[in-house]
Image 1: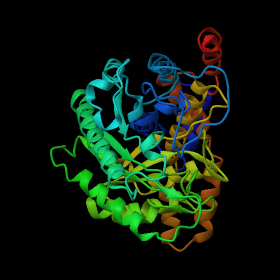
Image 2: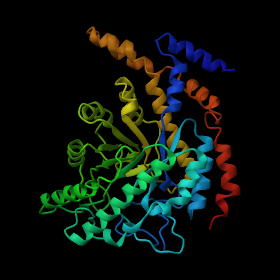
Image 3: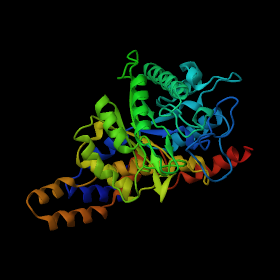
Image 4: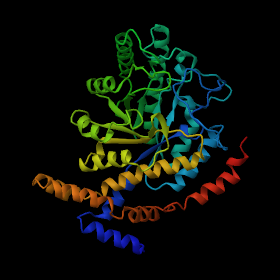
Amino acid sequence: MSSPAYRLAKQAYAAHGVDTEAAIRHALRIPISLHCWQADDVRGLETPKAGLTGSGTLATGGYPGRARNGDEMRADLDLALKLLPGKQRLNLHAFYAETGSKVVDRDELEPEHFARWLGWAKSRRVGLDFNPTYFAHEMANSGFTLSDADPAVRRFWIRHAKACRHIAESFAKTLGTPCVNNHWVPDGAKDAPADRWAPRERLAASYDAIFADKSVNRKLCVDAVEGKLFGIGSEEYVVGSQEFYSNYALSRDLVLCLDLGHYHPTESVADKVSAHLAFHKKLLLHTSRPIRWDSDHVVILDDAVRNLFLEIARGDAWDRMFVALDFFDASINRVAAYVIGARATRQAILCGLLDPSAGMKAAEAAGRGHERLALMENARALPWGAVWDELCERDGVPPAAKWLADVARYEKSVQSKRA
């Protein structure tokens, strides 16, 4: 039995031509790929390396309960899955390989080194996505990887990327769902370089060598490339800029990744969707939250996230999107971070599906700009929260913030006992 609040919300949306039942069904079907690296603060599971070197990534804070191994990470993810409505996936980075006491360098990784992750995903009926890890390694200490001036460094990372593509393909074969394999490199310079040309030429050549491997089924391993405005150690110059990757992906028939945290704070990523999809077949979206710089804060339902999915809804581009999370915050409970970020992302998806766009477009087409603007403002006040709670109830997860009790119990009984 639906709540009185939902029944009223259903009527309110119906008056604007919106079917809340259809919106709920659609919102639950769209997969969101959870990022494994929130659970352990982007430390990885490599043996025997400890800590990050040549990184370009940094999780700040020291909240108790960080996962220290793969089993603890998977336990945290299990709880998160129980508290999240809709369809989820898991996004793995290559340095979460579990090789026991054996040291396996990244250019020698094979599917067997992810057997425990694969078994977990299969038992939970969760698809896997993947990422080569081009940071936190002695071969990344220069700040460059695929664009490094040293051919030996480039060859190492090319071998790593090729290995990762085969691993992604194996995930897809085993789980029966394509694996998005996203490439992001930290390559760049802290201060103004004298030569901006050569690193980009080397980066393009390295990627060409990686994707020249035709033995990988690209329908199973869906390669994506991700640009950035700046980052730690690359404040002045990023080799793989947004412009570089947009052109590279388009010319090589790859998926372009748009990360909300990888742009200037005044840029609208939502506005880029229709521009890119006029040419690109599909996009990979990383929901994140920058605070003045690329800080990857936990996603909330802010205007940037809400407008992004509103734009997708207005263009009916759902089938041309892959959706994933990308943030890491060590200052709060890590499971709570998953739940907040994933729920905010699906709430934005739902809000997009609930948007009474038809009336707005009709007013705009008729030249009634005042009416279009008034309808846009009125849509903000529609009771989407009641529809969200109904969505959660139907999918058997706690509505509103009732999930906080489950996280509190888990923190007390499990996370607080971790050293």
